[in-house]
Length: 190
Image (cartoon, rainbow, N blue to C red; front, side, top):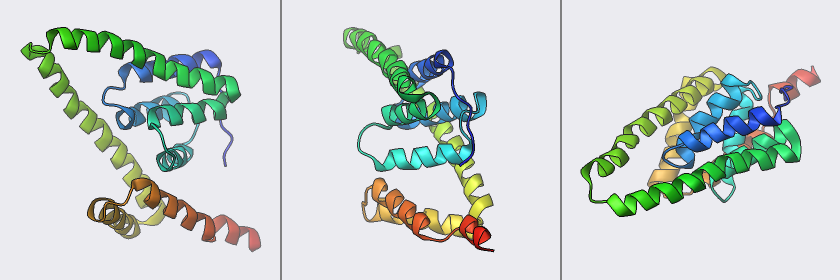
């Protein structure tokens, strides 16, 4: 584990408020925004630590949109950081939902309102594709492209072919990684 920077509560609040305001498409669409703020903009975590948080967050029940901010806030600023990060994400979403659903229900038959909803889909697709490419590159560098491709194919087959919940696949991989002696364990013994 590497040392991370401690986050000032104000910066944590504004970072997660931006995520809450700009995270169209739900929790999965927010993940690239969280990575941008936490890893690239503020360097509160490394890419590897963020990937671990994402993997663990996906194995737990509940929405990823609150699990990740809660854990990240706690990790970088303690209990106050957890509360601030979660509140900063959900309060803008709640207010926006109330406002937008009111407008939508009143003007739902207007063509441009319908078009706005459809226009968000490609943007979210691009954001998720970029996150997937980032994780592919990290996996390829750490494990090699053959193992990474094989793991992606097996995971895809289990999830899409057999209908297994992604949390079970991620949990199995985490347990396998914990039980498998890694490079650090072999380096320490030599």
